[in-house]
Length: 460
Image (cartoon, rainbow, N blue to C red):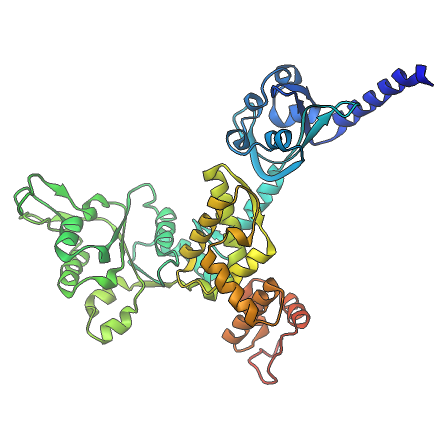
C-alpha cells in the first residue's frame, strides 16, 4: 500500500486541478512573499490576465483592488490565521474596468499542515450589482432616493418641471435635501451644461448678500479696488438656487423682486444694468404663506417665486426609506474610504428605525459617517453608532416590553403610516412601497390592533 501512495497523491492532485479549472469562481494562491503561485481559468476570465502573465507577480500588481490599498483580506488571513469574507470590494481588470467582486480567503497548507501561503476565491458580482443598480434607479432621481409614494410622486413630475424655465419654490425642513432636489432639476434641464450656483441667503447680512449676488464695480465702496462679478451673473444661462430665502430682510426682498421681474441686475456702483438669462430656484425651511399673512415676507415676491411648489417630507414621515438610504450611504462611503463594510446588522438598523431624525437625511448620513470612522469591516453594529443614539434607543427599549428592537421599530413605522392614512390599509401599503397583502400579513404577524371603524376604501 505504501508504494501506491504517490499514485494516489497524483490522482488526488489531478482531481483538484480539474475541479479548480471547472468552477466559475476565480481562485489563486500566494506564497509568503505575496507572489502568485497558481491562477485558475476563471481567474483569467474575470481579470483578463493570462496564467503565464500572473504567476510569479505580486498579487496587488495583478488585481489592483481597493482592498490592496487598505484592508487586504488575504493579508489578515495570513497574519491572524483565520478565514475572511468580504462582500464589498472590486478589482481592476486588464481593460482598466472596475469589476465588483465578493472575496473569501483562507490559509494554504501542505499535506503536513504547514502554512505555505494563502488562497483567495473571488466571484464576479457585476450582474448582481447591475440588478441592484436597476432596482436603485427605480427609486432614484439624481442623488435622491426613495421608495415612498410621496417622494416618488415628486420624481414622476420632476422631468416636466425641469424642462420648463418657471421659478420653483422648494419647501422642507433642514436636512431634507432641498439642494439635492434643486441640482436634480438643473441636471435634468436643458441648462445642465451651464453653471449651477447655490447661495445661502440666510448666512449673510444684507450688504454682503447684495454684493455677493449683484456684484460691484471698483470704487463702489471702501476696499472695492476692482470689479467683482455677482453670483447672478456667474449663473447666467444656468440655474441659481436662493437657499433660505425666508431669512432675507424686507428691503432685500424688494431689490430681489425687481431683478426677477426685469431679468436684469445692477451691480453696486454701476450705472448700466446687465441682462440675465437664468433659472431661479428658491428654497426655505420656513412657511412662507404664513409669513406673508404675518407681513414678514413680501406677498409679491412670494407669488413671483411660488410658480411651482415642491414640498419635501421629513424623514420621520418616510421611515420606509431608511434601509434604502443606509445601503446607499454605505456603498458611497465604501468607494470614498476604500473600505469593505458589508451592511448593517438588524439590531443597529432597529435603532436607526426607532429614531425620529430632527436633522432628517443629513443626520442619518452623519450617523453612517460616524460608524465608518469606528468600523473597518463587516456589518455596522450598535457599538459603532453615536453613543447618544444608542443610549436613547436603550431607554426606549427598556420602556418597551418587547426585547426585539427591530420588531418594535417595524411596528412603530406601520402604526405611524396607518394613522397617517386614517387606517386605510391600501393607502398605507402604497406609502410603504409594499403590496397590500404583504401589509396584511405583517399586521397579523406583529399583532397590530386595528380600530373597528377606519378609513379603508371599499375595495380593500
